[in-house]
Length: 348
Ligand code: TXA
Ligand code: MG
Image 1 (cartoon, rainbow, N blue to C red):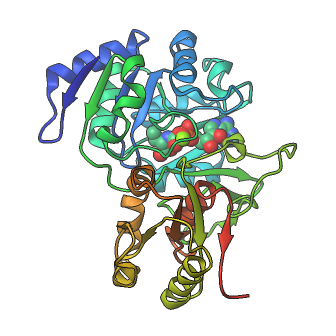
Image 2: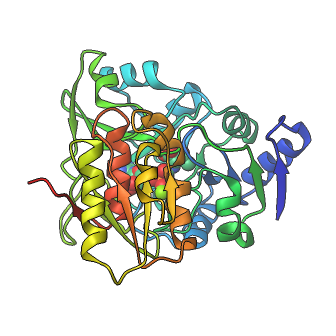
């Protein structure tokens, strides 16, 4: 495995090697503006199969196809509706994935047999140059073993994937920290299948109707049919038991955590919380994720924090919730899954 450091500048020679490897059917780990991806030539069935293998990914969870420009996009989808075009014109390149009808060029292995494909055009310069130079669409899920938190720093995911990929590109910490907003247009509505940095309000500003999928904050039942298969799978979970502590104010969330601690004297407890609550938990291992009003900062740190939980050596880790607004919707969607929907509050 080759590891290349692009944190200071893009090494053109190394980029060419990675692009050639990708094109030739090998796997490459690369940064995007959301999280790191593990990419394969989307037109090469064998390469795509090896992604499922490397991640231990269930074979009913389709991959997103990444393109470098609209010309490549139109080769992969036969038709784009006016609303879809509006989304593409506004949000591409950027942290959005749009579910579109799929062209026959894309192997059904990529979409797990669905007749739609998720298309994304990342804005991260390394990602775009890599795809442009490989000159093929790139199927890339988040670079992590299935079920683990996504990776926002190469050092967090290196050991999970290094034996199964040809190259890894270190582009430093990713900007956003949670994965792209996944949307699907149905009739005249934009359905958000997975919330992200691009919020319902951002889409409403275009004069479009927006609906959050009902599983945004709710667990899908095993037998239930879901719009996005990824919603059903175990996700982001540390091995250590985690409990999501919610409340309408900073103080209520703190009191919820304190109440849990008071009623579990026999357990060793850690906390993931905001800066403002740190001083109240001085005798506990505490991972601060940012200031309470800085939701972008919290989203940037959340996956690294979840990855640190298992190093705290505690019986239970309490996770402080955030407000469900803006990118807070995406943060809470990930935290609920990470905590396996175990939520407590002292409020009714
Ligand atoms: O930000 C991101 O989107 C990152 C970076 C690497 O681009 N990628 C990513 O991929 O998060 P992944 O595979 O971890 O998540 C893709 C999600 C899954 O929940 C999957 O079920 C859903 O998108 N998805 C993919 N294709 C779909 C389709 N045709 N219909 C519905 N959902 C789809
Ligand atoms: Mg993922």
